[in-house]
Image 1 (tube, rainbow, N blue to C red):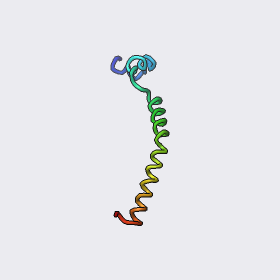
Image 2 (tube, one colour):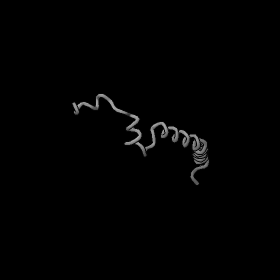
Image 3 (cartoon, rainbow, N blue to C red):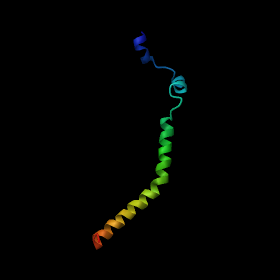
Image 4 (cartoon, rainbow, N blue to C red):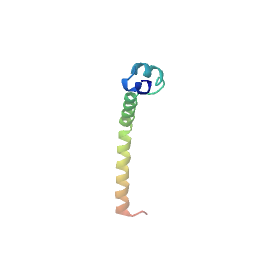
Length: 64
C-alpha cells in the first residue's frame, strides 16, 4: 500500500512549513510581478512613444 500512498493526499500545511519553507509562494510571486509591471508601465509606454516618434522622424527626414 506504500506505493500508492501518495494518492490519499497528505498534510499540505506540513509540507508548506517544511519542504517549501524558504520559497516564495505563487500568490506572492504573482503579486510582486504585478507591482513591478505597474511601476514600469509608464516608462515602457514613454519609450514606445519615443520609438514611434523617432521612426516617424526618420521616415520624414531620412537617416541623416
